[in-house]
Image 1 (cartoon, rainbow, N blue to C red):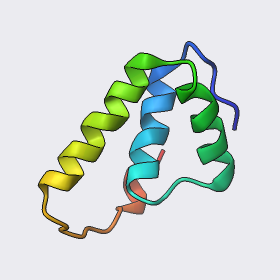
Image 2: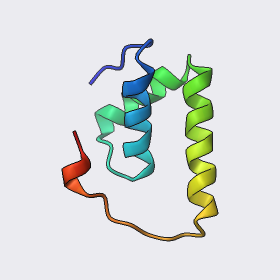
Image 3: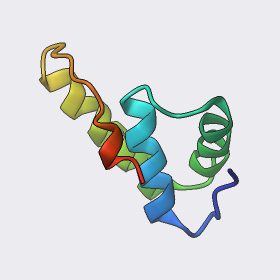
Image 4: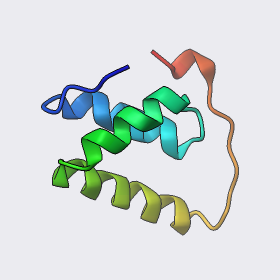
Length: 68
């Protein structure tokens, strides 16, 4: 999957998958390329990391029905 540099919605969905450990290696690579040029998605990623850190290490399973 190649992320369009202007499609922040798709990038943020991939960030969510990445933070949940559910992104494919191809998705991760596309995300790294997008993040290299996108400050707003980097901010979204940082906010997600802070939110996860604030959960104190709680674990959860990704519901496959939520993956579109």
